[in-house]
Image 1: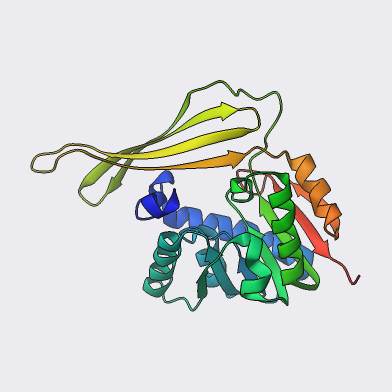
Image 2 (image 1 turned 90 degrees about the vertical axis):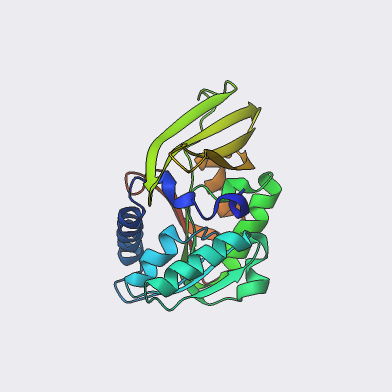
Length: 249
C-alpha cells in the first residue's frame, strides 16, 4: 500500500508537522523515563514516511530508519534532507532487522500499528525476536498498535473519514475502508483530489491487510522471546504502547 500512497500519506494528519513534533515529544518522554535523558541510538523498523523518526532525530537522537516500502523510505529520506537532519535510511523487512541493522541499539521502535501488517502470530514472534536481538543489554523495544478487542465492531464494509485536506492548490478528501474476515481485515486508503477549474478529479489509493492481534497477546509474545519489565502504556499516543526491556540473559 505505502508504495502507492507515500507522496500523500501525510494528509491523514490535519497538520503533519505538528504530529511529528507531538509524537516525538511523547516517545522521547517514554525513552527518558525508562533510560535517562541522554541522546540515544534509536532504530525505527517501520518508519513509513518518517512521522516518528524525523521528530526523534530533531530531538538529538541518532536515528536509523527502515521500512519495507521503498517509496516511503525515499519520502522519509527527502524529508530528512529538507529539515537538515542526519539520519540513516534502509529498505528492509522488520522480520530481518537483525541481519540488516545488527545489534547494540538503545531503543528499537515500531509505531503506527505497523506490526499488525504481519500475516499472523508466528510472523509477529519472528519480528519481536529481531527487535530483541537488535537491542543492547538493558535496551528497550517500543511497539505502538491499535487496541484490538474481540467485542469491537467488525462488520463489513466500514468507512472511516479523515476529512478534507489541502495540498498546495489541491483539496483532497481522505478516507479509509475496512473489510473484516475473523481476525484479519483489509484496509484501503483513498486520497480523492477534487475537480477544479483546469484540474480534473483524481484518486490515489492503496490496499493492505492487517492481523488484529490484541495488546494482551502481544505482551505474551514479548515475554516468549525474552523481554522483561513488559508494560502497557496508555494515554501517550493515540494508540496503546507496549514496552519491553532486553535483560542480561
